[in-house]
Amino acid sequence: MKTNKSPLKTIVIITLAVVVLIVALVMIVNSNSETGEGDSLVKQPPTEGQPTLGDSDAPVTVVEFGDFKCPSCKLWGDNFFPQLIEDYVDTGKVQFAYINVLFHGEESKLGSLAAESVYKQNPEVYWDFHKGIYDKQAGGHDTEWLTMETILEVADGISGIDTEQLESDVKNNTEIDEVNKDTELVTEFNVELTPTIMVNNIMIEDPFDYDAIANAIESELEGN
Image (cartoon, rainbow, N blue to C red):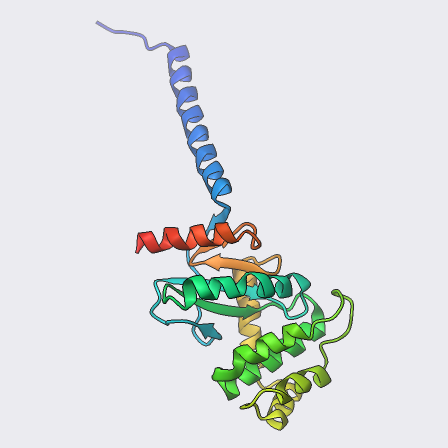
């Protein structure tokens, strides 16, 4: 005996399926919003050749995309970076890496070239130089302060930096390939603001929400 399937019944079933799918997607989005986490990307930024702190075998990697000319990066470095180091890097749970961003033109480029040159010279003093440059930050984005004179002044106060070599490296763009590599990563990971913080492959929605950073780290640690 032949039976006729109701078109209305089929439409209702399809509609219900679509509604269930939408609800599931909304729940996922809301879950990410509640934890302060942003998008989960396919992969995490590579750290090979980048300045790092902590155990290279640490189960979690935190990456900062930062710009030496960015006041928000200085604020993050002064207020959140030390806590991250104490809580997670010094305990062997996290390796931290820094990737240069050149959002503020020639001064950003100059600072990045200098930092890469110092890192090549003596990785042991890179972070002292890194902090020294941020400590010299003055004014907002439009204030010119990141000059060769500033760079040499910072370097001169740190044992283990050959300032003549540093000046030569910067003037000759010796480490431009490293700077360009960072710029390619900024594009690849669609970094639109500084600082941008990533925990493994998770981009943190608000870099100034330390609880969101910590929650993402703890979640990644539980997954290892």
